[in-house]
Image (cartoon, rainbow, N blue to C red; front, top):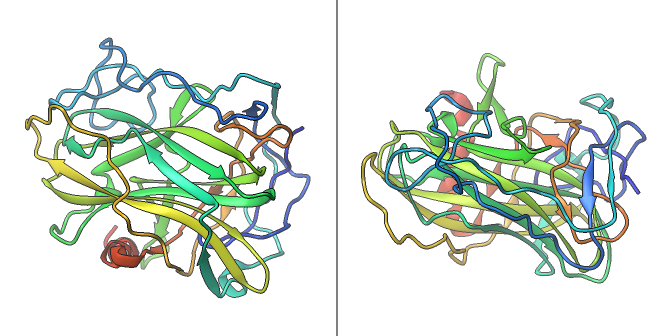
Length: 332
């Protein structure tokens, strides 16, 4: 059964408990009882070469040696009960729940997790695409509606450069093709929208109890990116009662190495122990999309993914990371 889309001006750190309309939903695949495990890797074939300007081609993948090669092969298919699709038709703003004013607090929900899996802990600038998984899991005994998910990566406080201003790019696989249409954006002082290229943000229309959804993402750091420490961020959030939002996420330490460096034997990045503790005010809006993005272990309602723009985060010991992010619009 296909889920309907919920489209409105929305904050990442808050979500409507029940807010939907019959206006459009993309396709997604589902399986009974188990979370999906898309097969393959974004570094599996040496048949293609990546350019620094590529933000939409599915053909490029990177090695850690500084030269890009390969063809991503990870998919979001699940073994199971079929697929539903609808063409997008919802407007980018609707009346209804307004988390900017209605969500006043944020609490950790340890039954909900949002994890980045397979992203290297060290990345050589110019080494091409690195595929990873974004996995959101609902271990509670109740279904969740309108679950906001995001991934973001930015330098720490030791450089004046910004990964989110084009030095790093995150894409998601949609219908077998890579796209950057799920990137967040900020608005500069002239009202111009600027993409935050090292971001991904979306909406799961529903996430059933004891189920998970998995998305294929990939990251590229351009050769012009300076060496330095960075943080990757993963998060999932939903709205509860009495203006309270609930969610969970993790921070990951990622070291950017200078172009031409060697990073052999690098482990996958692991959560560093910090957790999101509070929400920040949003800007931007949601818009509908179409396509197969998430594999889910739920056995009925299929997930809807919608773009949410202009979110900001405040994360425990990663507060500097959030402060840097909120500055993006001032010099984009």
